[in-house]
Length: 107
Image 1 (cartoon, rainbow, N blue to C red):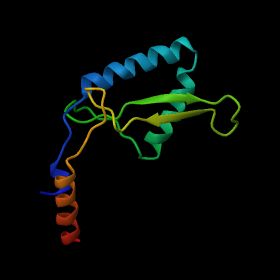
Image 2 (tube, rainbow, N blue to C red):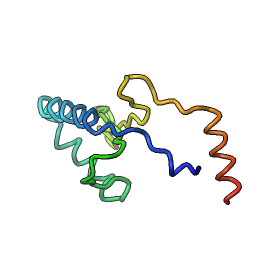
Image 3 (tube, rainbow, N blue to C red):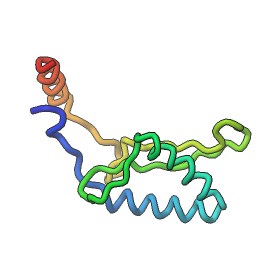
């Protein structure tokens, strides 16, 4: 079994809920356009793409504002360990070792 065969469960509804809360908060703080412009840099560089499929794992993100920074007053922080249970996703160590060994033999 290769690493590409393993998929985390879809978290679309949870990620969408977090995104809606973020957007509302950013609008309330008059920071939405600044955040959107920063996020679109990921899209224009190819590091992020728009998807229409809701069956997948979506990485929630939030804003970190640093008004004292002239080069990056807003940063996007991704929460790749997000899970529905509120606890970080864990991978069974034995399965992870097996996948790494299997993939290293294919190289």
